[in-house]
Length: 433
Ligand code: AMP
Ligand code: GLY
Image (spheres, protein in one colour):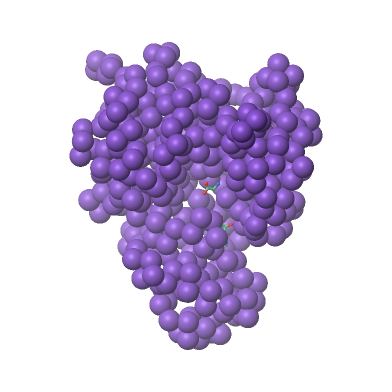
């Protein structure tokens, strides 16, 4: 097979740590692409030109791609995907990595995903659907004990409540039904699920129609507090590989979850070309799907991409052009760990605009990186906080212990008055080693 010509003018859409990791990895491509980003953040801006067009401004992004002669767009977040950014880009002849709106629905609607999982008998938690609080409350009364309430639509990580008792579950059901009111996609519905127990793992799968490549495993740390306490967040840290998923378990996950999922999506008539991120709970009865996301995970991407030897641009382009068979995935043996520095108060209210003092690159431990998420520049050209998750501190090393000690050294050396981070990223795995 002839090697396809790779695109040279690349636009990355998004502004988080995930997009900073994507830009960094794309710049490493041997073809030396010209990369731009919209809207980006202070860290991305230091590497490539950024344009202040928000990720939900679909006409603005299409226009930018046309104006800048972009030949390949890599979409980071879920919102532009579900708003049909890829559909619109394709209409004007621009290739993109990321599913069209029909594929993005697998993330945008949890009831749709659950229907697919049940239809194709892919292991998942038992669930019931409700549109009225009274019926939801009656179901909760019939199913006492821990139970999970999920809003149907995209809710920026705030749509899932793992309730320990009935009163909490009923409150969540009422609140999540009202949260969705007015959303066209979700028609104010919720899902009430059996509460699964076990350890979670994130699997990023590059899908191209019926073909796919599983990227190295990763484990996120969803809760804000140490020892997995407090509310869920977008993710407070990650490491790769998730060693709990050994080759044998990965084979089971591939056979029972990944292959059937890719087949089901294609069977539904969706030509999916993007990342299928499968959230998996390793339950005592075997691995079960918690959710699908249709984009790279954040912060999983920050630990998965630095471990790829394979050119990311070639991989994403192959997925978008249905030539995934040309790609052999190569991974380095180093372990990667990322600690997220958040703003005090996150995932609730937090301050923005606080000055952050970073370290010069040469002061960092070897194989360490500072990825920006919610950061911006103020009028005095200082870096300031601009979001809930502010920075991702990444370190690579032969062992998880060394990676953690380097990442935490950097976390401690950064000055930022609202700085909070979990001290136990990777700790559960370290206790096992
Ligand atoms: P989701 O957005 O569906 O992945 O849910 C967010 C988080 O809520 C997951 O990462 C889990 O930590 C938790 N969760 C979701 N569904 C369940 C379930 N059925 N049982 C236990 N925990 C769950
Ligand atoms: N880290 C979880 C997510 O990206 O949804």
